[in-house]
Image (tube, rainbow over all chains, first blue to last red; front, side):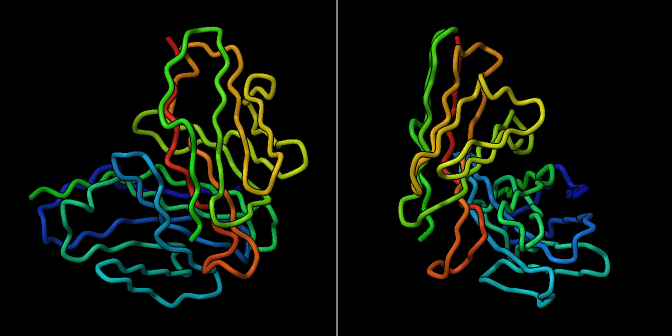
Amino acid sequence: AQKVTQAQTEISVVEKEDVTLDCVYETRDTTYYLFWYKQPPSGELVFLIRRNSFDEQNEISGRYSWNFQKSTSSFNFTITASQVVDSAVYFCALSDPINNAGNMLTFGGGTRLMVKP
Amino acid sequence: GAVVSQHPSRVICKSGTSVKIECRSLDFQATTMFWYRQFPKQSLMLMATSNEGSKATYEQGVEKDKFLINHASLTLSTLTVTSAHPEDSSFYICSARTSGALTSFTDTQYFGPGTRLTVL
């Protein structure tokens, strides 16, 4: 069975601080995708990134960076120089095996990030 | 690219009525769409997987006669909440899975903006 754990339910930081959101996953599959989504107060889930299980290269996109460590089954998300607009709930998710046509997602419980001015 | 719309965004109805929610992939075709339900301050709960041209696959505990899903085309899936009751009040979110070579991220679920249902 697949499982995604986001141990931090709420994080509060002051603007311009760096913040890391943790994500630990469990799966017996050898091929899978990992995702991060952002859910602002409006409710819509915004896709941020997808990583393949066979690609452990870290990725940076502007102020966002992701650290994928297969050895520890973690896929952490760091926001550098946080801004108030970053305030949202962030979900980490794990997909079915890549060859599975369904590609269902298992979501973590989410981390609510509050960035104060 | 990969935009998903959902309509309506908010609906208030009386107990016993039926409500239809539409989910559309605007710039790509989606053979598979998903319907989720989200309670306040909780994660998303998958209700069903909708495949174009075939019956939806419901998750355990989700009543298929209560939540009717139709995926009649590659860009449209609908969820009908039949005989809605106050306990059906929730935030319903759909997603569409990309496939094919034209989008940057295939096999990725892109989400609609959600529908907030309130049953009085």
